[in-house]
Image (cartoon, rainbow, N blue to C red; front, side):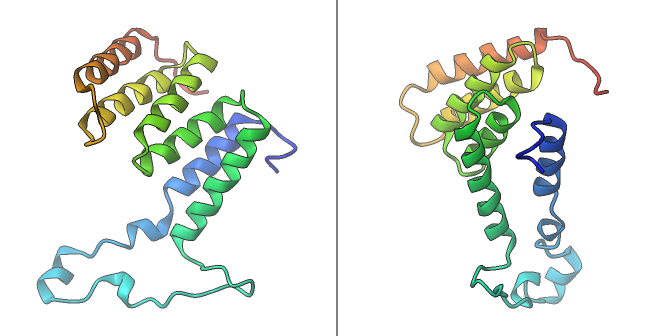
Length: 159
């Protein structure tokens, strides 16, 4: 479907499904279960494999979608939605330098959209808080600059 239609709404829909997966909510045990000493919910489930030998887990599906998004981004490097999605994957993997680069590229593709400015600001600040940061003050300053840019951009309601 995504090969034929380059709709950002379709990409946003699939991203929302991916990041709001039902299995993620089931991974945390309730406080009552912790008090009773029950084992973690994921320990009850056995890992299943498909006929092709692929693991049927949320992490495997997440990795597959990440690979799909990166392949699509290589074909369409100026696609705003795919660039933003790949930057989100970088943040999840704690690859802050790559996330900053992808969010900055998304901001250049759509300079008047507030979301890339906010994401770039949080990526810079997260990068500054990591152990790999060499010049923390510069990163914080850049993050606050993008935060000011976000504050000044007009917010448009969806639809």
